[in-house]
Image (cartoon, rainbow, N blue to C red; front, side):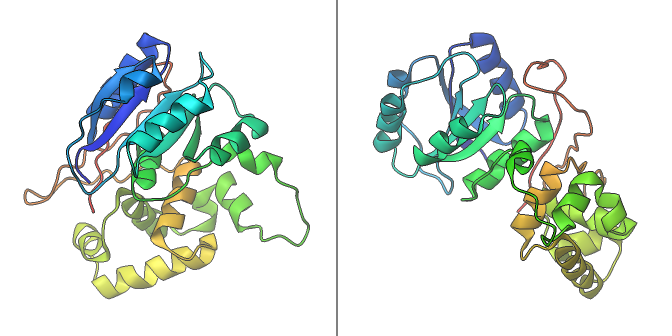
Length: 251
């Protein structure tokens, strides 16, 4: 994924600048940064494979839904993502009813922010991990998600965790096999095992679960003929913009 376009909207210029620095260190192109929705209406966007993501910082200002809707209507196919100060169920439900594809909390790790935006660009909807605490507990519900949230390493083998990190990075089985010096058939078996243990049905669901569980990303040395992967083990929040994690996504 290369240069997904993002428009930043928020009343706090310092937060917008921090977000811009974080995103432009990755594979995103910030095409506009403003405190007024109207300033996004005249965007002249290049055509590309991925849609524009409108990232709205609502930690300082609650924007009128009508103004946000006007921006989305002006840019067909655009994706709306809200960044909230803290989790609020009613606010999250309102956001998704207004057409949002993502609702993130401000203290999100840099790695999770980047991974979430990439998944949103691919058409996924992202909800905060705090939502789990709001869901009713059933004694008959599957315990896999709770176990993963607690500790992925208890649920998966060391090799499976290693492969899951590469799935989050977006690597296909063939490239994972080459990086880990395994056969492609062996990787395929491990991937199926990961899906079964995590109770998911595809790579995207596994990646979302892993990101929400705080799994660190693969840190293998890059091959000279592949796109660079600069892994980010460093944690930071939007409040701490001086330390930038490094992450690249390879399809």
